[in-house]
Image 1 (cartoon, rainbow, N blue to C red):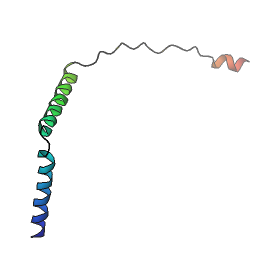
Image 2 (cartoon, rainbow, N blue to C red; image 1 turned 90 degrees about the vertical axis):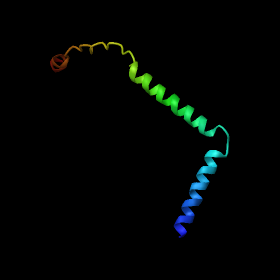
Image 3 (cartoon, rainbow, N blue to C red; image 1 turned 90 degrees about the horizontal axis):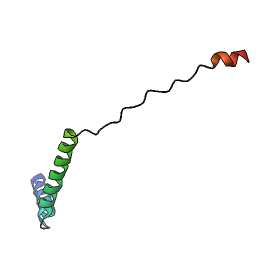
Length: 68
């Protein structure tokens, strides 16, 4: 029986936190919608990437170092 009382108290506490301030749930839903829209936009418009330059060629100086 004590577990049921604690469960009811936890549910009532969560309900109080959610419904205590007007606009709290609508604000959460608005933020969720913005996040989903941003995610979809990111999937639809991949960032344009610049073509990378190939790595520069470095002359081999190992034979010059041995000669000195």
